[in-house]
Amino acid sequence: MEFSQYEVNALLQITNRPPVVFTEGHGMWLTDHSGKRYLDYLQGWAVNCLGHTPQCVQDALAAQAKKLINPSPAFYNEPSIALAALLTKNSCFDRVFFASSGAEANEGAIKLARKWGKKFKNEAGANRYEIITFDHSFHGRTLATMSASGKPGWDSIFAPQVAGFPKAQLNDLAHVESLITEHTVAIMLEPVQGEGGVIPATREFMQGLRALTRQRGLLLIVDEVQTGIGRTGDLFAYQHTGVTPDVMALAKALGGGFPI
Image 1 (cartoon, rainbow, N blue to C red):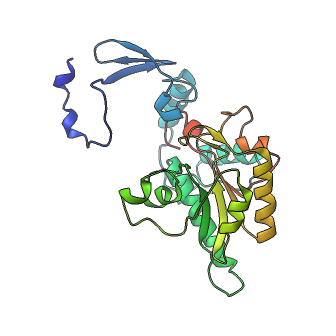
Image 2: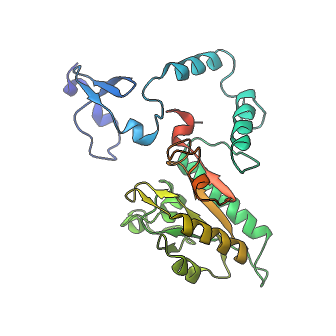
Image 3: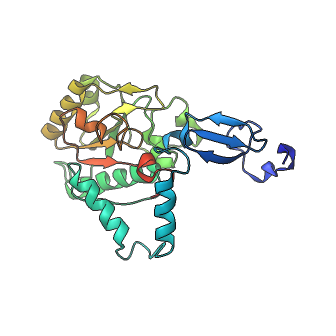
């Protein structure tokens, strides 16, 4: 089939795509509409942790599809209980909330922090809602997570932004501390900035943030959407740093190419 035969204009233009339609993928290799093969190092923007169409994922999807697909979040289901137990047993966390994407996971973390700041108010009795994030960070493409992100130019694309996300400089503890106000409830960061250029937070900086947040009564949130599930050698990147965060967001590799 020729590229011109595909009705690509039926899709909303959100990025400059090349004139290629991928039709198959196996492991590290993709095949396009003309039969040309590509060695794929993108893997769905760091999503396919086991490559394209791994047999174990095929088998798990087929087996579960024959039993139960979606009973709604208003009820328990066996796979969610089993996965939540695995995550808590292999991390420092106690509870798991499942969503469909990394942006939703980070939205959930933001909501959780704001809810915590409403319960544990500041000395004046007012809600705490500000979350300090970092320049060059990336937390998603919803309005709130774009506002939390520190990508250059993102403050104007869908302006006005959601308020409450002052930006600090990564690995500069003094700058972070200077941004804390009576409205601050949390500090949120990627242990390794992904879209910002693969920039790691140092071990000393992470430990400094943990000490600072405990001293000031703030939450420490780690966005491990890109770094989680073994991407840095340990199961989670925070485990390299000797700190215990309060909240962690996961996605991408967690689903092996599928929404959780």
